[in-house]
Amino acid sequence: MAAGAVSLDRVTIAYPNGYEAVTAADLAVGEGEFVSLVGPTGCGKSTLLNAAAGLIAPAAGEVRIFGAPLQGLNRQAGYLFQQDALMPWKNAADNVAIGLEAAGVPRKDALDRAHVWLTRVGLKNFGDRYPHQLSGGQKKRVAMAQMLIRDPKILLMDEPFGPLDAQTRQIMGNLLLDLWAADRKALIFVTHDLEEAIALSDRVIIMSSGPKARIIGDHRIDLPRPRNALDIRLDPRFHEIQQSIWAQLRAEVIKAYGDAA
Amino acid sequence: MIARPTLLSLQILVAVVLIGIWYIGSSVPIFGTYFLPKFFFSTPQDVFWRIVKMFSGTTIWKHIGITLTETMLAFVIGSVGGVVFGFWFARKPLVAAVFDPYIKMANALPRVVLAPIFMLWLGLGIWSKVALGVTLVFFIVFFNVYQGVKEVSPVVLANARMLGLNERQLFRHVYWPSALSWMFSSLHTSVGFALVGAVVGEYLGAAAGLGYLIHEAEGVFDVTGVFAGMSILAAFVLIVDAVVTQIEKALLVWRPEATQKN
Image (spheres, rainbow over the protein chains, first blue to last red):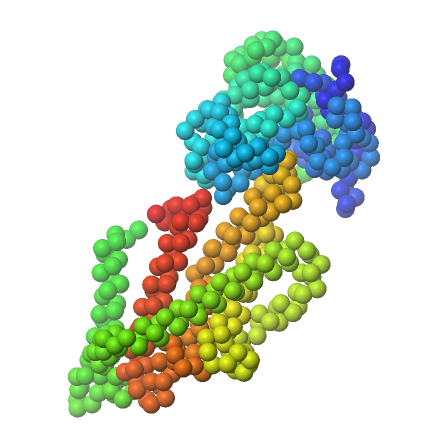
């Protein structure tokens, strides 16, 4: 593997109240690699992602971005949140343009490029809509454009399609694959949906149930690209991979629910 | 949802019934007595003609103008102060913690007791009324802006940070709009309180304004004058409120509630 876009070196994350969410996680994501983090609810996969984003500082271990230790926010990363993160007081075009405006691009240029991006995510004439006038899937499309317009070198996604219905999820998965394939960036995708992870990723990382969650599996997905997130699920190879990973994940899911109950 | 014409006719019906009872009680003798003696209750027709008479002169406009000026000044000064302090307190938890008991104390104090002091300090002109209104408006705006800045969604904030916004840009694109939306949601209340401050101030000591008119009429047991003044004041409030609603609609287009009302 090359220098690696993101590397986590024995990263431990603890909260001020002493709760240790993740213990000694090692993870290396190469440039242009699509990696999914999969684990049962509450296993700390989002926590690990936030460490890569610089939103949380690890208690021990080190996060390196293109070889350099990460301090403060990860300026090279774009982040796609699970919840609505659009500014409700800005319309779609302004929401997409804000990242460029913040970087000093003149407003008119920023808006022009925002419209290009809105078109690219399939929302050509939605620029003047406010977030509350958009459906869940449309809001996610705006959020993707908002993230991608800044051309970040690393993409971090925290169960971005979690709140969407099943069909919309698959359509969004395809859109994501198309956008990602256009200029392959390092991408870490957190999800609890194993099928989604396999359909999209190059590698699927399995985490154990929390607290003190660990990385317990690293599976390479050798399905051919370009893929179609809908059709790939019918591929016999898809089922083989799914069954072999599921055997491992199943035990952790049962453990997580057992602890909760 | 009730159809608009039905609603409107029902609303008018309430007025007609109330004024009808007032009219019968004050103007039609039942068993030789009036249930609502003229001296205490006046009559609807007297009040109506008094209002007509008031508006046939020009002085009434002066009084309305004074009250409006006081209301607007109290609203603007109180809002600016509330926004500035609301932001400051929300962004500096230490300041908020230190001043917390004092803010609560000041807010719990009935503001009417301050009116004589303001009169002493600022005289009988408009500024003592403005000051009273400011003390009312300030706290409403202050608490709303404070809340608005505090309750900015952490996700929206984290997202804005990840998009590269610095502190100044966060202020402009995140904190400020959030605080403004909270402030505007209290616009009706704060404008109402600005008016209360003005009228109560005039009532307690002034040479002009709607509150002064009412007070003057009360001083000579002129019930007709009191009711006429109150009616004009009520109409005035309705008009101010309608204007505020329009402003609100224009400024909060992005809010789901604002759109549904359209």
